[in-house]
Image (cartoon, rainbow, N blue to C red; front, side):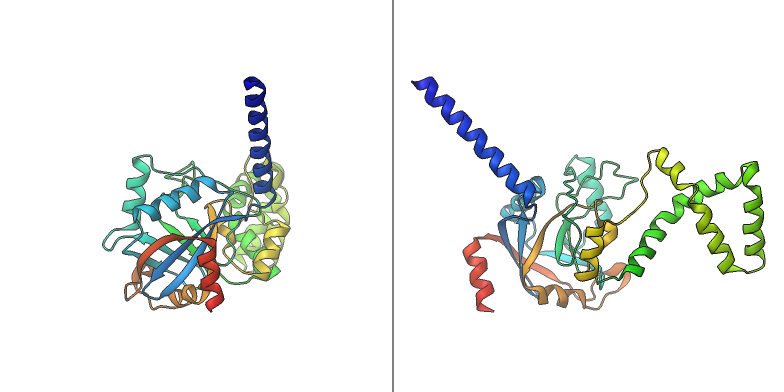
Length: 295
């Protein structure tokens, strides 16, 4: 009887776990934790996604340890990202390298639907050349402001991101004997200031190297229909997608983020006057609803 009972408990546990996992995958935006952040410029509440489990647990641990108390919003870029989590006098690059060198990075947790739309929160990190695993820093976070972008702007963004790799392949492709005639035409247009003709031919020829790029296992930057829809309707920072892990969003206190993003800054986007995080604590869903309803 005991064996049958244990077997039953085991299967019930497995089914429960599978059910929870399916729900998370079906709704990657499911919020299980709420964080109240008080700053010198106002308060706001974050909701953390259950899907990004490691980043969520790390952030909660930081909050419980008081790591963010008395830290700064140290970099503010209007219509872009506002970075926070450093103590006064600490340099971003120094702290990022210190954490990376002692293996304190977090593996990325990407989902095709979790992107850098307006008012999301993500973890900052060292760039790819120093951090090929794209490990998130365990402390420094950013909040997206961003702006809406129309179809033309998004197409231009794609083109600019892909331009360097296409240019590298085009240089090699144009050196082939059978393609020298195209190189001569491009040189002629460039020398004689015929920019429209140059761009038209260059863009047409670029189609020949895209298959070569893909056959080498390299991916060109391309926004999905879902990304385009979100950035046209809500705004955000498309170039951060699948490069920086987003693990939650601002649920309350949008005006605080807007206020922070509009402060005067100096060199390296540092605010002229310190924007301090006074305290950070985990709150219940009921507390969050009370705050929201008081407004």
